[in-house]
Length: 77
Image (cartoon, rainbow, N blue to C red; front, side, top):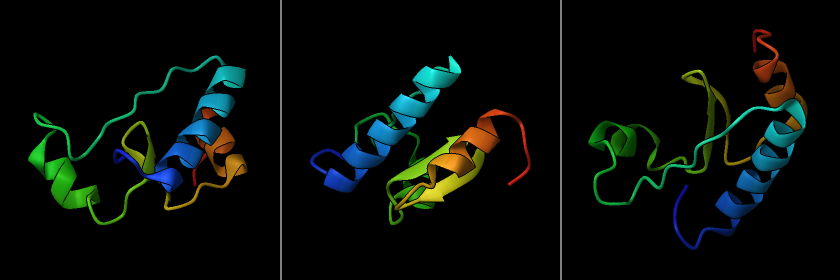
């Protein structure tokens, strides 16, 4: 995510809702924050917001809720 990014806020809302229903925790990482892994910034900085499940990208810029549900259930993308 990125501070002051409305798209990031919307995507995080979808993630929060779906993870809450599934009983899963989620973590938000601001790629611009000091201390953020520079490899993450290099990999994802131009495509924020990005949603990962167990290190696998599920969505970038937009997220289909069903894709996240399947990924949380362990189904292949």
